[in-house]
Image (cartoon, one colour):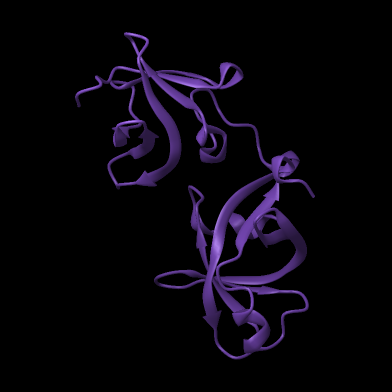
Length: 168
């Protein structure tokens, strides 16, 4: 499976118990929605391997999951740090004005004056709203992903238009 065919949905945080379960950090709107996908692709640096999802549980501070063929703690430990992805074709369509974070990463960020602020390096959740982490020539900027500042997302053009000054 190629990187562009997959959408990263989280990563393996560690082990859970002694029977091969792993702790998961999910980058999804609803943490347990990752359980909806029968096959997870785990990997790093473009090297992916499929694992059938067997079972899952919501824990107080993380998700726990059992993957087929991972039956002991050492095998689960070997997966620590691996990204979890699912095929883009299995994802529901994003609604109007909604975007998968994965689609925003790497987009150029330009303000209304046509000044390049950098590219989206990642996004983060703050509780109140998501925040674009933009890395550019003059360092890093944190831009709230709200209508007041993010004016237009132009996926086909590979850029985001923002109301944000160079000196902010």
